[in-house]
Every structure is written in structure tokens, then in C-alpha cells.
Length: 331
Image (cartoon, rainbow, N blue to C red):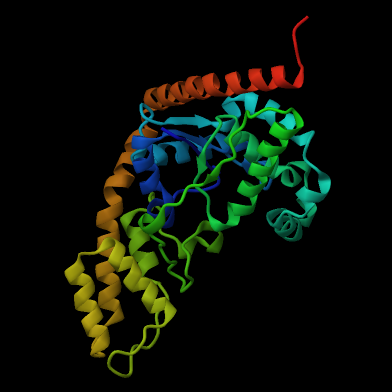
């Protein structure tokens, strides 16, 4: 079995894009891999150094992971800040990371431009902390989106550099986990091709949204004045609604509205009402499970401690061996 590592920032609720984009695959991965899923609370401080409710955000993300099907008995689910060895490995990697290569990182340049008053050292060294998160468990694969591909390449660089500098074959060079055809891209409600938190609240449907909120969001989704000729190509905003339907509605429902569009008889209001009810039907069990878990502090405590213990066992072994390789020895 291969080792897989992935993290998520505790900066907001999971939405349908997260669920179909990665979460379902995480649930499958835990059956056939050694999986480490962590909540990246250290990472969140690079852009939110004074979080309003860090603990609450961490708890929310944790229970949403669990509600979506991650099993703490099968995978290691833990908090980044619970493993001090990660910070030690981060420090060691920083000693062999160069200012120029960190400054050339695309995400650093983007963040420095968008948050010029908060260009902190953590932002600059984000790639080394990400590398520490990954190689501390000697990961073979990492599920990453397009925006993280450069960071993964830097992780490979740091792992290889350590091996070369100390003349060892210690760290594997992790590669991207390719979900292939199983990766479903969920579009936004605002006409954009991607559902996400950064695009605004109205763009995304969150797993924790109430039925009333979901109905309002879907009814406000961007549309046009309707087709003017049979079999007209759908504009992006309309294609988005149909793609949502394909993911959440019955095939006969999609077929009904597709035929209505093609013969110019479609009523977008009816399509949205049907889509809203299908979204509510899909998310209600997840939302109910989230609410149930939020009230079960004893179980959350058990999950966190279990994850901490398993992650610590892996991380402490790695750091102990790294220290020996470098030459830190007891007198």
C-alpha cells in the first residue's frame, strides 16, 4: 500500500465542488492506501494571522470530513498543529531552501500582490511547510489541484536535495495523485466554471447550507433570456446549471430539460426549482450528519486523539531519523 497525504485549510465550509472534486475520492483512497488527512491550521495563519475563531473553524471542517465518509479507523485524520515534529522538519527544510526559489513561487507572488500589508515569512516559506507536511510521512502520492502543482514540484526538489546533501535515499519524491475520470468538476452558480469559496458566497452551495439558503442561491443563479432557435449551443451559465443537474438529478430529469431547451420551450424558473430540490435532497443527509457530529464532543475528542497518536508515531520516527542523518546526537 502506498502512502497518501492531503490537507485542507480551516477557512470555510466544504461545498459541492469540494465534495465531488476530491472528498469522494478521499473516501475511496482510504480503502487502498495509507492515508494521512490533516487540517492545515498552521497554513491558515499565512493569510489569516489573527483568525476570529480558529478552533471553531477547525471543528467545523473536521466534522464535515467525517460526515462525508472519512473513517478515522481507516485513515489518519489529524490537526497539523498537534504534530510538533512537522514544525521541526519545516525548520530543517528551511535551512536548505533558497530565497530566490521561494520568491519565484507563483502563489507567493500572487499573495504578495493581493495582500501587500501581510507579506510574512510564513507566506514566503509556505512551500517548505507543505513539503514538511508531505514528506514527514514519506508520502508517495499527493492529491493536488492545478494551483498546488508548483508546490508539489518544490516538495520533490526539497526531498531530493536532502537525499543528495546527506548522501542518503531517505525521502521518496512524491507524485501527484491523479483521479482521472472520477474527478467531477462542479461549476459555480454565478456563471463561472468553478464553484469555490473565493468566488463569493453566492457562487457556492455549501454542505452545511439549509434548504432555504440552497433554494435562494439556486433561484438566483445566472441565466439568460432563453434559446431563440432549436438545438442552440448553451452559454456557459446555462451549461453550468445542466452540469449541476447531471451530477445531482435523475437522468430523466436532465433529459426532460435538455429537450425543452432544444425545442425552445424551457422555463428556467422550473429548471431552477427542480435543481434546488435535487440539491436539497442530496445535501440533507450530509447536513444532518454534520449537525449530529457537532453535538458529539466526546466522539470528536476521540477522533482527534486517535489521529494525533497515529500521526505522531509516523512523524516522530521520521524526524528522529532525520536528526541522526544530519548529525544531531545525544551526548
